[in-house]
Every structure is written in C-alpha cells, then in structure tokens.
Length: 497
Image 1 (cartoon, rainbow, N blue to C red):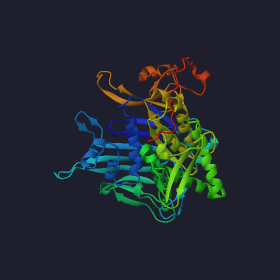
Image 2: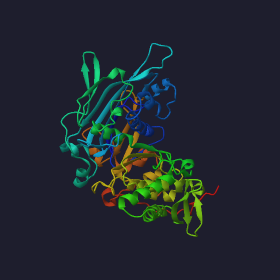
Image 3: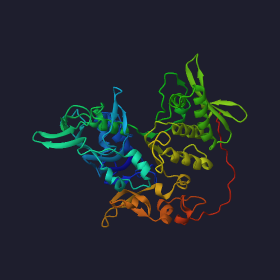
Image 4: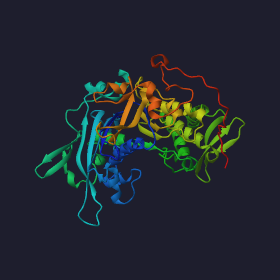
C-alpha cells in the first residue's frame, strides 16, 4: 500500500509531495498532470523489476529509441533537468515466497524507498545517453511513528494487522567511498553480510535483484511495488476467450477475464475445502450479484469450458434465459464485470490505478461503478485479512458525475498555480485537498481549498449538487438541489455486433 509519494524532476512534477489513503480520487482539468502522477508510480514499479533503460521506456509517451528517455526529465524552456528523484512510503506484505518458492518473512512492514536517477550524455555521436543511479535507499519507518505517517482514518486493529516488526539499520543504503558512490544491500535473512556495488556501473536498481529469502524485506518490498498496476481496461481484450493454459490473473488491459474468474473459483474450492461445483456456484453468484447492481437484467455470469477446443468463454444470461457471450456485452458492462471479478480476489494486495472510470458507463450507473471501486480498497476499520485484503485504489478523472460521488476526504485536487508573485507566468503543478480533511494534518505545507469553492476552482458543474457527495451531510452542510428528472436513456447490457 502506497501511503506517501514524493516526486521531483519527473515530467512536469516538481517538489510534489502527496499522501494516499486506501481510496483516492485525483481530480483536475485535462492536461495538468494527473496521468503523470500515475506514470511516476509506474516508473517506481518498473524500476523494481527492469533495467533502468527498459523501465524508462515502459512509461507512456516514451518510444523505443534511447533518446526518448530524456522526455521523462522536467523541461523548463528548452532545457531538460538532469535528475529525477522518487520516494515512496509503503506498507508491504508481512510474508511471501522468493523466486525459488522459499518462504520469506519481512523484518518490518512499514518502509520508505527512495531512488534518484541522473541522465548521462555521451560524447559519442552514436550514443543517446544513459541513466545512472545517484542514490538508492530502503529503510524502515519506526512502528511508534506510524500514526504520524498514516493520517487517513484508521482503527488500531487494522493498523496492528498490517504494520509490525522492528529494524535498527537500513535494508539498502548509499555510501560515499574513496573510489566513488556505492549502494549496499544489507541482508536480514539467514547468512551472508552486506553486498556493496558501485553505483556508476549499475544497469538496474539493487532492489530489482533482491529475489531470494536472504533479503526477505527487500524482496517483499520489491513484490509490493510490482503489484502497483495501472488498470486500462480495453473492451477488445475483455471480450476475448481464453485457452485452458492462459494466465490465471486479470491483465492490466482486461485480458484473461474468463480464466481469472474460473481459477478464482478453483482457488476458493482449495481454500474453503469445498467441491469445485460448490465453489464455482458461490464465486459466480457473487459476481452476478455485483453486476446486478449495474444492470438489473442480468441473471447469471458463468464460464463455458469447451473441452474440444480447450477454450474458456464468459457468458451472461438475462432474465429470459438467453445466454450472451462476452463479445456481445457492452463496454460498460465488461468494465464493471472486470472490477467485480477483481473484488473476489482473496489473495489480492497492492495498488490499482484507474483512469477515467466513467468511460463506457451510463451516467445513471456511475454511482454503482464508483461504489464498487471504493469497496475494492481495504477497510481500515477492520483487520486486514482474506476478507479484507490490503488493496488500494487511486482514480483520476475530470468528470463531474464521478466527482459528485466522492467524499471530501478522498479527493485530491490538481491545479496549475503561480509560484512567484513577481512572475505571473511562473506556474507549477500543485496537489491539494479540501479544507478540513485529513491531508491537512500533514507536517508539510498542504494547499487547501474551501469545500464550497471546489467546483468554481475546477470550472465544473454537477447537475443537482451544490458541491459534492459526502458521507456526513450535517458536518459538510451540503444542500442537495432538487432537479427535474431527466428522461430515461438506454442502459444496454448487450451490444450485439
């Protein structure tokens, strides 16, 4: 779970310091930098697994040519900055398995990871430059200071279930030596001492090679960062059947939906020690019930397993008993269905970033879609566990219909604000919050706006609402305006083509 992110020098993000709760909705006009925040998170995730160059190329709008990595660095006028710094505070799983399927147990679960990258040009005309690590650190955050770092509402029983352990020294540190800077991986497992590597020659982060139980905390931090995913559900991928040998988890574009749902039921049978038939019925019914919140006409969701062709196809049955394959379902139905399937993952953890959740969804069904996205996130009033996985959701949107469904505590506001009174043209991206919400308790300076100025600031109009949805109307003093009901619009479950 990503609880705090600091970014500087990445695209248009300079000295950005943001805090996340279990569920966050980032709002602001198009073109400001909402997507760049997601890209920074994805860069951190990629650096935990790939080489520096491959991680940089994996970010959106960066092509295959090495020269394109320069576009990740902040551009001021005609000049790019030289450094990118990224720092994340996170809660990691307490245990897992390494690359050899050996059990790994973290020394402590509340960590801070920081990395600074520099662009290095080359005198050779054939070279487009490279990336160098200037600093890499993985350190613990004292358990006694957890409440100072976790400012979002949470109960002690939840906090104790996800934050525990102790550590006196770093897991990864950067040290200056006579022959240059070195990055040290400190082992906290069995056997072996610290391993130092020259920073200037590293093609990848030290964290990315922590894949054995000899460094269990670094390993589990790496696995946590790899679980930070940008979910971009594509209807074409969602409609595809799966071979029996397909991946058993939903891909970030929505591929393998039939396989994910089927294997989820099989796993449920193993965990709950029930028959496969009983597990399939239970899991499919839960997904059907969820989908019924969006579309009343759906009666059943099920997977057809074609033994001859070895293909799995997702079907939806309406109340008349007519079965429709996934290729006949509407885009909005498929997106909602994908989230409903993700909700059933009992071993889920990590972060789901979602852009423009409202795409393909009928306006009257957006509240149900937002509610499902919110309920994907961990409930911080209850201990984390199989029924309450440590899962986090961050949305970004500029849609008034979505904003109207978000509580004030869950909003993060992006604005392009002036930074120099003497130079009105000097502006910088700022991430703020609603006045008197939990982010305002942070020690760092936090930009806030009054609740009743939100829509004016964003130049948005939400029909029927004076400001935005909140859980406690008395505290927020919100007054909902009565509006005449609009005529019904078509809300298709199926789109035969």
